[in-house]
Image (cartoon, rainbow over all chains, first blue to last red):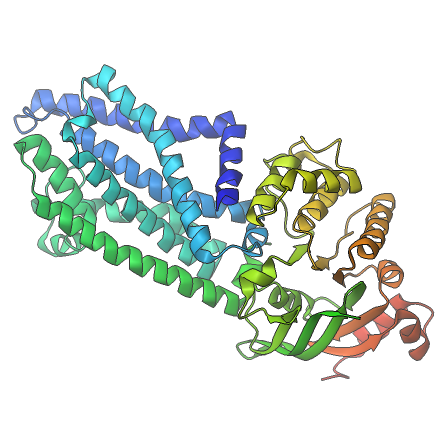
Length: 258
Length: 245
């Protein structure tokens, strides 16, 4: 497992543009949403008492996005570098490959997120730490869901080959409207609300807003997010193993690496 | 002589298409077995199954007596593979790649192993260079070092000298001859270079349309088919349309 982590550690640390790329987009994203937050805060009454709501949600969403895309990138990196076969003929269990990628994706996401979070305080006078200890649980839930999406997309890449790559980029954008990241769930049409309630995202972002606006904590939201995360990650890992077996049957593992 | 690889009635179907139709062969220790055949004859599929990348439809592959389908991880520890169609991560240096794969194969005394391969494969000058910036010959030597990082008992080589200049090609062939004498490993060599096969292999398998259509010592095959060299034997067998179906 350490070997696979090391492969990506070398890759990132050898290249300044790669490090810059990891830091650049989250920072731009947070800065943009920071100015939008300031504008809304000064022009609407809804946000008057919670200037940091949008920005905090933007940071949380970006963490989810980076985790998911980060996991996909690790997998795609092996395909692009034609190293895929080398990886799958190494004596590593699938569970070891997944564990290594899950940990590496976290490191990648944090490299991007930490500078962005540090920017928010001097630029906008907002600290995400206002969420307190519950920040950890919100991040944990988002991390697990981001990894879940990453594993699902990687399962698709294994099953259908590199042509599935476009799906890898669009997953998060597809789910974002249902995640109720920047608005309460009541904004959604009823049918969309039913879909949204099946995702852990809605409970995570509702709770983040609840803590920041009402200064109260609804543990049931965190528990619902946790339970849904458990269900989805079990499904995604099962699908990954199924896809691996199918790929061995169909020959995708050979073709994908060439 | 000890048999390291045993393939028994191996078949692979992709839906209706039969890519490999019941092949059997053995490779002893200290032996290089040549696997010849035109494109689409089933060579890559066979190698894929031996590496555990493909699930056989039926049949068995045993490495030192262990079945790959039941002991995949244990067997992968003992084998390795090189092909011009797969590459080492391009952005890493040669040494970083060897460290990464050494860790993946859980090699003890990794530095000693890297030093040994560096010396044997003349990697000193390129060890700290970015792999993607190397010439074909240098990349080939780096890939060969990776394929030997776990001191494999069985080495699968797919076109190991394709696109190399004659000098580098000769160096690789000489290296393999010396290495097999030193380590007494088994090698399966898939190649379209008939001179290479004639030089390295004491026995060869000729595949076509998923079956082994002929096998034996290169000299005996040349004599048996009444041709001047192995290339002519290959062409004769390759052009014999549907004769073996």
